[in-house]
Length: 109
Length: 114
Image (tube, rainbow over all chains, first blue to last red; front, side, top):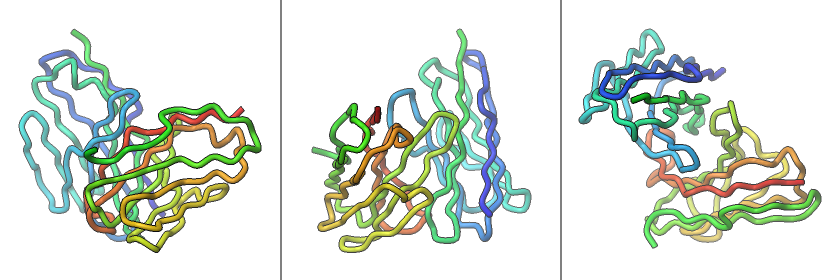
């Protein structure tokens, strides 16, 4: 079956770097998504990885290893506005997204 | 309007009542989705529609129904609400059906069933 694991909560300091991990188990693979969700708001798209390796997009980067069923989201030069939940999601065999429970990131000054 | 809108923003409902959550998108996206989000759990798919006129069941469809009469609208109906349906409900859309397309979310409806 499908399973996605993420840490429940992480704390980091403003200006620092943080890595949020996601491990998944799927039958077949059709890419992996990262979304950001601020408290009380809707999720918004951050990245999509379908090939192995690191994709950089400004302060945010996403890494994928298909052989290990592993991805991480790397946030650099953390800002207070980065305090949010980060959601990992993968398509299932019917191409509908299965979502992790999300990682709540707390940024401290 | 631009993007996806949902109504109402929040609602308190007595158990046993019927309720329809509205969702409208103006991006001409083919696919639309309804999720519920509960504390400690990931988003869970209730129903989806790959194109106007078709619908499908997601992970947690019981107690909910949907219709897709046109491209823009995808209402979610609770025929007889129960307290376990207390949740935040998100509507989303994507240009193409299939899990590889980015989904865009509405602002959500916070529903409390007493």
